[in-house]
Length: 229
Image 1 (cartoon, one colour):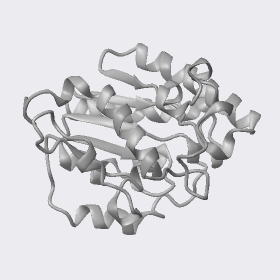
Image 2: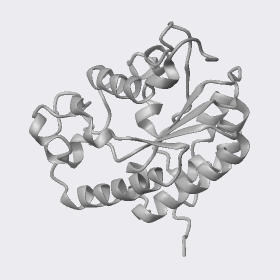
Image 3: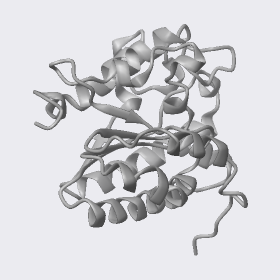
Image 4: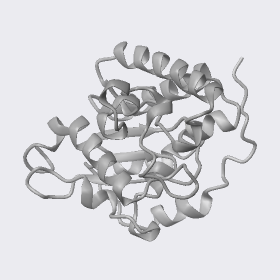
């Protein structure tokens, strides 16, 4: 049986209140996840996600609701406050690293994603949801256990995305920009070492340049024309 592992689902309440204090922008692509999105901001010395992810005509396309070291369970907890009021036309979900740190299994993480998907599909019929697989990180290049867990999650979340027409997998683990050797794409131990901050977990601006390209590619169809196209 599934058991909650994080005893304080409100630990990022201050960040959530800051998002709620901003004007609600409906009809955008909502990026929802942990610090990979949460640090894609000028406050962290990076060009903001909203500037990087735009419609082909240059109009605004995205809203960034990434928050801290959040887990998918916290993403569910704040759904009614950080997702539903924005009535997004598409959602990009990026969780996993912190979930593993809290002890969630790959099966539990996929299950929590399925709960999120069912809620969003009920609230916004026809919505497109993009789910990221396990992101490579410099910190884990020599951690075989983490890589085994990540690959297990990748198989499960890929199968889940294949089971529903409204889901699309964002294959972070095999994006060529993260690997200097094309023959080693997908090998977590062979990722680029020059795009990380000192903590070995978060991107420098060069890393976010690659991340931008990944999502522009994944969302290409949605970024055609004007924002309401």
